[in-house]
Figure (tube, rainbow, N blue to C red):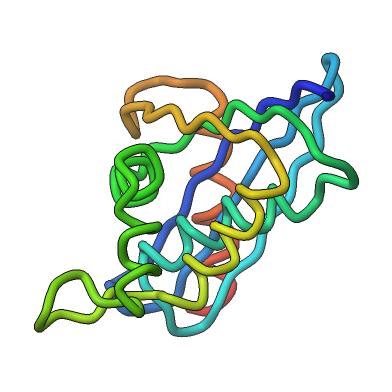
Length: 145
């Protein structure tokens, strides 16, 4: 399997509000940047969309190391929360529905294709690729202001 590094970030001006996401895909030293945004969204939706969009770019099953500053995304995947929500018909517990089930469904499907290791990185702490993804995300969110 090809080994790919992916870096992602999401941003939102207000929550909800105009949002954007950015991602960098790296394979054998070659990088591709992608980004997008929405007029009315949430930060968590943008974090998830960045991950989904990046993984969707891969044309064959890959071994992926994915770096994100979103504990929401990293913990839900590393600790099995998203799979548990799915098994419980998208309920976090007996009373609370899981948010963004459509996005979690897509992410879980992509993680069945690719071998993905989620790595949390501290945001706004000088991590070069995270900072670049943040700039991409913020630029996209500003298109809707």
